[in-house]
Amino acid sequence: MKIGDEIQGCARKTDGTIYRSWHATIESLDADMIVTIAPAGSVVNQKDGRQSVIAHHLRSYYWHAKFYNLLEVFEPDGKLVELYINIASPPTFENDILSFKDHELDVVVNFPGKARIIDEDEFLEAVETYQYTKEFQEQMYAAAREALELADNWVARPSPQFGENHVK
Image (tube, rainbow, N blue to C red; front, side):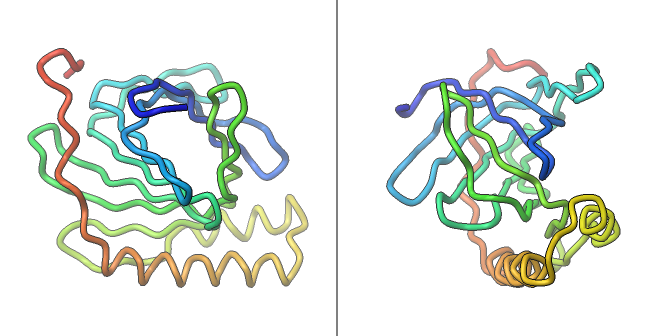
């Protein structure tokens, strides 16, 4: 993998089932993380076969050793509107596919505003469905608390630029 390569991203449930996939371009990578970008108009494939089109430019940060990933969400005019952090497994990479297991707990910041934990109801359903241990639940809440602090102190890069060829 190198900067400029297009890769496929896959969000999986804890049991490994893919529930969402998309394509993105590698913007940067180093020993700690990979950063991808996707323009407004990109297609997201859903588990049920439906496709949706994203309305915003996205920059996604995937740390190799963190139990979360972060999305910067930009209006096509470049305005940062949201940070969204999935509490998830560190990513894996195989055959140009970036994949992570989403553990349902999330952190969001809608600007202007402060970071908050969301989807605790979905996390509680996942606890039952996948039989998360108390230790695992504590680890995910610790990751969410770390993500709250990260989000409240995050300094976003400028919006990715895609030129006039991206779909609007």
